[in-house]
Structures are given as structure tokens and as C-alpha cells.
Image (cartoon, rainbow, N blue to C red):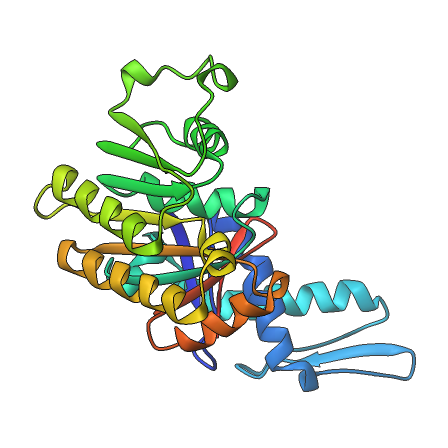
Length: 276
């Protein structure tokens, strides 16, 4: 679970694993809103708080800015919520776009954040060893049931220290030549066979770029929409790991999915940030 703060002036939301890290987030964000409250003249820097009558003047610019950020943070510290989850923002029922390359280190904190809070975790990934390492390293306990759907052969020798016997996990290998419909049917069957009523579901799709590259835009859009509708029946969160700058066609598909995607999140220096 993480701490969450939402700006009441814009749609910015941030999550941090350590509540103390939020001071830097709130201070920097509020300073951007109130940059006109900071001025420099006569070799000195001054700030006037927009929330109260506090005002300070100093010669040390960096020190003054840091003090102003800390002061701004103190005005919103009581609005920082603890024990939250990113999926709470969509009620654990929706589609989350994660702006991070699926095979990069940047995505792993969010990947484990979602799966660690679910009863059933299903991941469609071309790099199953990476996912296993991420889950094993970050979670004290895996989900009740984990199904890793791999588009490549899993090399158990790559993770000899991971005790699968102590975890309710299964690895399903897919033929990479399967169509989006066939991949979607496989995931649907997995949900039927493994989901328990009232249980949170975390569905990761880290093959979005491969689907867009292998099929036309229309079929890629239909795949995501059908998968979202199928997951909606069970109740859970679908995560799409994407790097829109890497492929123009990916950006095009995402534009068509604008109304399907409920939340866009990025990882910024280990913190999770909502993007408009």
C-alpha cells in the first residue's frame, strides 16, 4: 500500500511508498502553482505564502526555496491519505495505462504494486523471468493465484532460487503466432478457471506493442476493448504497459482507446504519478 496526495487545483495525483517522501512532491507541485509568490530583488529572495500571512526574506536562494516548499507542504499534509492503492482511484474496476516500457526497470514497481494487492494476478508477458524476479523480490507473499501467460518459453534455470512449490503459480506458454482473439480467449478461460467471487483481479498486458506491430490498428483496439469488457464481468484492473513514443502506431491505437482508458500513470523517481 502507498500514500496518496491529490492537488485540489488540478488533476495531479501522486503516490509514494514512504509517506515522508510526499513532502518533496507536494512542495514542488505547489511551488509551480504559486511561483509568483516567490520573488528576488535587492540581492535577496522573498516569498509570501498564498495560504496564510507568513512571509520570509533571505539571501540564500536555495535555502529560501526549500523553506517555502516545506511551508507549502505543511498546509496540505493533513490531506495525504495513507494505506491506499493506485487502483482505488478506479474502484478496482477499469483500465490503467502505464507509461513505461514493459521490459524496463521503471515498470516493475507498478507491476508488483498491482499484483501484490490482488487475489488473482494474470500477466501476459514476453519476459516471464523478469516478472518472476520482480514478484519474488518485492512481495512478502504472492497473490492467492498467479498465472503467467508467456509468449516465449520459460527458462526455469534462469530463476533456480525461486521456490514455485511454495506459491500457487502457473506458467502458460502461448504460440506467438496466435491472433489477438485467441490470446483474449486464453485469458478469458484463465479467468473462468481461477477467479473466485469477490476477489480482486490484476491483469497485466505487457505485449501491447507486439500486438500493435503484428496486427492492424482496428484489431488492436478491438482486442483491448474486449479484454476490458471481459475483465469488467469479473471485476478487476487491466494494465497496459506502453511507450507511446516508441511506435507511431501505438500512439494511434491509444488515441482510439482514450474513452476506454480510465487512468494513466507514470513512474517518476520511484513515485507513481497520475497523468492527464
